[in-house]
Image 1: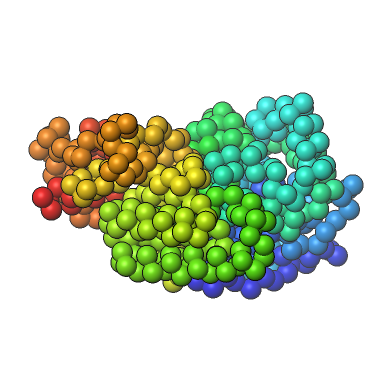
Image 2: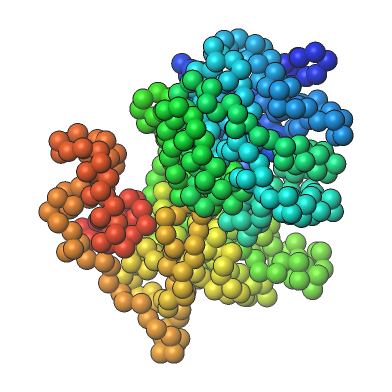
Length: 519
């Protein structure tokens, strides 16, 4: 899907930037949080994936609030109130011919959406509040924490320094960190960012919660780093007949973590059925290798030799990926990424990359993980890619780190591993066990992982039957219909299967079943 054209709605002398994407039967207005930039949103794979999926079942209406992004700038010393910005939403709806819409209010967009629903109930079909709150100081930051945030913003806005406050799980992701820095710069100036933070600190819409009369869904991450989960529970408690759903994760932005779970819940709430994802989803092994200390090597070699070495490494990487039947994607100066149809191929490719880099007097660190990815053209997205990037970021100079599922699936391949510990990764329900690839000469001083995959013996007959259907690609609802059981019962069976096999996802369980069949 091509990013939509940016247009402008006029309210008085102010112009509000907006975009419309999708042709669904209902209108959904996405009211963003603290900062936004309509066109930059599409440059982040996670954000673009969120918007494309929402637009698959709605006519999605996006806007930059006045003072941010592509909308008219305003006096940073006299930023608009929630009441004024609420009028901006109405102006955009009028411009696109939307008489009635559902509102998705994310973070600071939630109180604004609440105020709109209370003021214009006839124009509000439903409310979806993600990571939202009614009162800033009790839910987001105490005054002393806000003072520290403002002090840091005063000197570092535009560098991406605020990322740790919003998405600590992405701090070690260099691509996302660079995008976030641009997100800061292109959304608001430092002066406006500070003024906005001060204005948001005055938010208190607790008085309107009792007057909300539209269907309301409240979504909140269990360990949200920005807004306490208690804030979401409070909204659901005070809004009549509101539904509250807690989602695993700590990164605050709606386009991070398990985006598909968020969209599935929104789609089911608005349409009565889980939306289908028409992207090409496959189970694959992901490899992300990164140069260690590239700045040091660049300074050591000089510009010309550094460029030559990088070109040689890229050529070697393309050959190694091709030799192992992989597909490269998203390559950058400092990173090599590829996906494979089997973990052993990915490990062997990573080993070849490490040797090629060493021959060029460069150092690589790599991460490998198995999971579902979405392929669209040359782009690869999905939680599994985020997990792989985190594993790669943890790997030390010359190391190849892999997740537990990789070691389980390469049993009998002649590859050897040693346990390395666990990593808590945003979007996963539990910690991820990691292992390091070791060569034969290092087997004695390091503890080798057992070369056997988990047995299916602990599963009951019914659980094996459910696992067969999971591996066949059926959803919980489809399995429930096939077996004449309730959705809740199937969810319990799937949870028990993952617990007994010590696996993180349905995809991992399906992959394990496929491996067992191959023996």
